[in-house]
Structures are given as C-alpha cells and as structure tokens.
Image 1: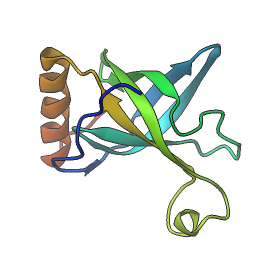
Image 2 (image 1 turned 45 degrees about the vertical axis):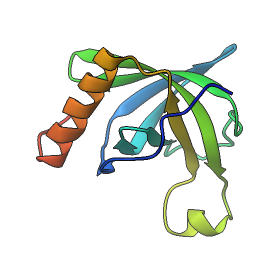
Image 3 (image 1 turned 60 degrees about the horizontal axis):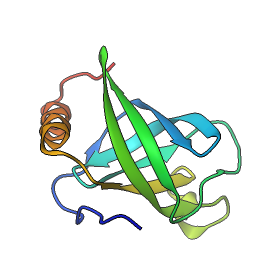
Image 4 (image 1 turned 120 degrees about the horizontal axis):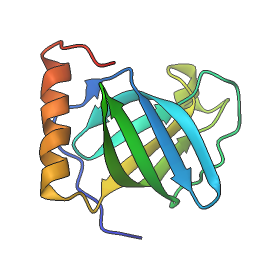
Amino acid sequence: MPPAIPRDGERVVLDAFVKAAAADTELVFRVRDLSRSGLFLYTRVARSYPFRAGTTLSLELFDFDQTLTLKAVVARVVEPGSPESETGPTGFGVRLVDVDPATQARLEALIARVAAGAPIL
C-alpha cells in the first residue's frame, strides 16, 4: 500500500462531486467531508460499493471549472446496517497518498475557501 498522509488539519463539510476510478470501474460520488489527508465519499443511490479497504483509486475532485487529480486508498467502508450508517450516509473514507506539493497547496486552498463559507460548484 502506498504511504499515506497522516490525518491532520481541519475537516470541512463539502458538497462536491468526485469521479473515482479503479481498474475497469469508474463511478461518480458525492463528497461528505474533506481534509488535507482524505475524503468521505457516498452516493444517494442505494447500492453496494465496488471498492474495498485497500483499493487504490484515482480521484478527480471537481472545483468550479477545474479538477484536482488525487490518488487515494480506501481506508474504510460504511455498509448499510452498520452502527455508523445510523448517523450518516453509507459510503467510504479514503486516505490521500502521493500528493505533490502543488496539488497539496490547491487542496489546502480549497479547504480554506470552504471553511470561510465560499461556494463550491
């Protein structure tokens, strides 16, 4: 498994779209929250998630007319009927890995904008 960025920094609530791809599977998810080390992804469509803990994903996070391309590893999956699913959506948390400094700066700028209340399209 690639080295992960340790969990740190502020976690912000973000309603944005992410395209996630692994092998021959590519799906669009919503973002529940975002930090400098990861995201929680879900869909409002009832489904079983095709990604399991340890799966490496290529992500495209849509931010206005730009995208942030990120590499991530699925850290955990929240299945229907689990205790966590009683208080939030089912989905999966991903840890960001191998983030270059320029992308990290863009990610942190996005987090700062969201924390300040700026809209995301």
